[in-house]
Length: 215
Length: 259
Image (cartoon, rainbow over all chains, first blue to last red; front, side, top):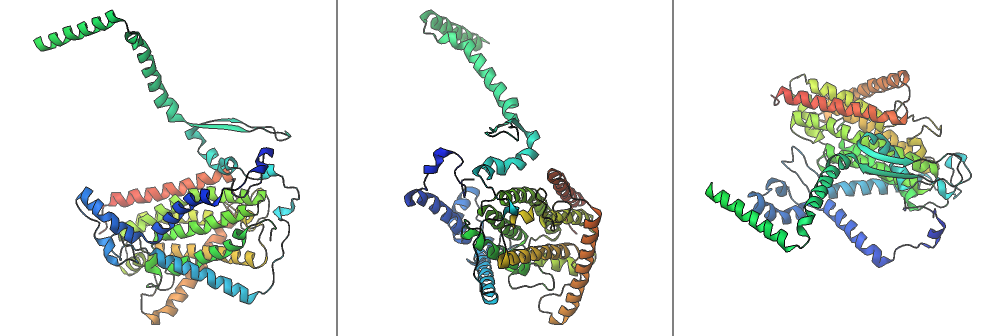
C-alpha cells in the first residue's frame, strides 16, 4: 500500500511524490472513467453506429429514454440514472454535513491514533499490498502454486517471500513448450548451412511430390 | 481524530451515510412508486453498497494504524465473497418477474395471485446468510466485540470518535435496515401500499413494523444459537450461500419460463 504508507526501507525516505505532469495522465484517465459513468447515454449514442455496422442492428430502445436515464430494455424492467444518483448522494452528504454542523458545534481535537491503545507503531506494522491480499490468496490457495518463506515470529529482521504462479501454467503450457523445444532441437541440425543436407532435403521433397502426383 | 490522517477520515462518514440514505430511499419498504426508485435498480443498489464499503475501508487505512488496515483487509475479503452471492440472490426474483427494478418486483410479487416459487426459498436462505455476513452479524463478525483478533467492522471504526463515530454507527444501522427492507421486498412483499394510495400507508407501516419485529426476533435467535466462526471459515459460509443461490436459479430454469 503505497497509498498512505511510511517508508519501510531507508532508501525510500528520499522518495518524493510524482509531479503534476506525471499525475496528469492518470488523472485524465480517472476523469474519463467518471465521465463515462455519469453520462453513459451520449457515449452509447456515439457508439451505436459502430454496433449497427458490426451486428446489423442498433441498440435502439435504451437510447430513447432521454439522456438522463439508461434503460436497457424498458424503464419498467430496469433503469439507471447516474446523474440523479450522484445528485442524491451529494445532497445526502451535504445534508448530513449541515445537520452535524448545526447539531454539534465543537471543534475536533487531534491526537495520536488510538489503535486499541497500542503505543509503538513502526513501519513494519503497516500493511503492504502483499499483506492486504494475503487472506484472498490463502482462500484460493488450492488453485495456485504458492511457494512461501515465512519467517519466525521472533526474528528481528524477518524476510518473507512468496511466489505465486498458475497451476495450469505448469500443467498445460510448460509441457507443450518443452515438447516444442525438444522437437526443434532435433531439427536444428538441418539448419547448419551444409549444402548437401539442403540438396537431400529438396530431393526428398521432390520425390514425395512426384509420388503424390502419381497416386 | 488521529493526527496524521488526511481528509478522507473526515469525509468517509458523510459519504457512507449519504450512500446508505440513497439506498434506503430506493428500497420500497412502505410504498412503491418512490421518487428515486427509477434512478437505480438492484444491481446499482449493490454498487451503491460497495461504494460505501470502499470508502469505509479507505478511511480505515487512512490513519495508518495496524488494526485499521487489518479490518479493511478482512472487510474486503468478506465483501468480495458476499457480493456474488448477493447478486445471484437478486437475479432470481428478477428472472421470475423479468425486471431488475425493485419497484416492479414488489408490485408483481405482491399483487399477483399467490404462487409458490421454490427457488425463492433457496434465495431467501442465501440472502439471510449474505445479510449476516455483510452486516457484521455473529457467525462472521461480532458487532459488539472489541477483541482485537476477531473484529472486522469495529476494527475499521477504531479511530473514530464523536460525531463521526455516531454517523458511522447510524449508517451501519441504516444498512441493516436496508438489508431487512430488501429481504422483505423480495421475499415477503405483502401489504406494501401501491403508488399513489396514501390511504393504505398506515396499514403498510403497521405491516412493516410487524415484519421488522419478526425479522429482528429471528435475527436475535439466530445470533444467540450460533457461535462466531474463524475468519477463514467465512469463505465456506459464503460459498454455501452462493451455492444455494445457484441451486435456486437452476430450479427456476428447470421449472421453465414463468407462467
